[in-house]
Amino acid sequence: MKLGLPFATLAALALFVSGCSKQAPPPVQQTIDLGVVDLNNGTPNQVDLKNGSTCTITPRSVDGGRFMLQLQIEKNGVVLGSPRVEATSDQPVSVSITDYILKLTPHVK
Image (cartoon, rainbow, N blue to C red; front, side, top):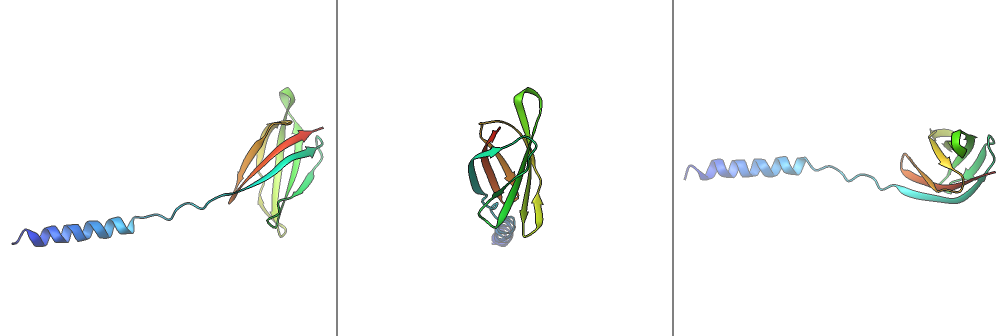
């Protein structure tokens, strides 16, 4: 029964390798929906994200009636991210930031 030992060794090795190659599932991103946010062109507006963080949103007009939203997310005085997103007034937009997704509908006056 010489064939049985190499087969058992290969089977054990295959199980060991497949068990070691498992990856942890990706973290689930929390969604924070701010709803409609009233903004003035060129004026920073700070919003509480209710998770210990704040977001300062500054809209700047670009071509075609669209706006570039500059966001700065801070927690305990530390900047977590400064994403920018192009948006249209009264149209929903979402931005992925580290461990959460920020959704809002900018209403630019």
